[in-house]
Length: 379
Image (tube, rainbow, N blue to C red; front, side, top):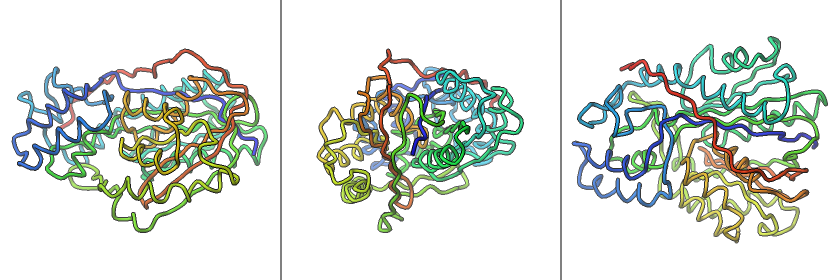
């Protein structure tokens, strides 16, 4: 393979959620039972998340109420249709900001982009954010568009695989991959342990990658995918009447720890996992990172970027692994250094890729683009 990630762009909503403050908001919900009152602080305090970003200004308890929260702090339960209305309104600016950041960082003109692959599992709408990216960035009208929907946290990998295939087939192809997720649209007050965990870790954000032939960046060497059938009921993403519903059982970290070593073995060429200095692991949660690191025998330094992204942004579903890769590049990678990227999704699916750093340069940490939220108060 010679397909290379030339640049990664990122974007988050302007509203930042301080973890202790949002913990207190969920702890104060009037219908929270005895078990819920114990689980909420435990989940939030043990999440290893300091802050997240959201398109829902009302989730910041220092602000007034809105469609998701009354002025007295009680969380409301909008219908799935109402939540999707907010997705239709608020997702496109994030997609556009991340895409613009990636194209500019790659030093390319928008007219050079030949293919656009969008990814999202937190809302549905057509015309979708891909049209906004085409129109607002000025991509060619004949750009080939593709969308990967509802695959969950690991969906960046199928998108990147598609991008690499296009580039390997056509040396002139320039593929823009954009992952955008508005996970907080689906939070709700709940006594369900899975929902409480989801409330404690998920945030909103978008990330984009420019994939083209050769050049400086992260060159793809190989991809692998594996399915763990016994995990099918332990991680799931379903559409309910009051938002999308996450199933994320306490068995997931254990399953990840048991199966990750065999899932990534084809990428290691007979070597040890610890021979790879940087592992860009999707931070689905602290326990998932802990089990992954333990099962692979990795030093703390190998997963610094994953833990930093979890701490600063939480879990942004499909966009998160691109945040981790950008952090790793900005922190500095030696020329020729291998990197393994890894994510998990419903199935239980383990997606991974091996990349090689090619003439990358460390750069001062750059904050993701901040996108203002223009709300309509849809209820």
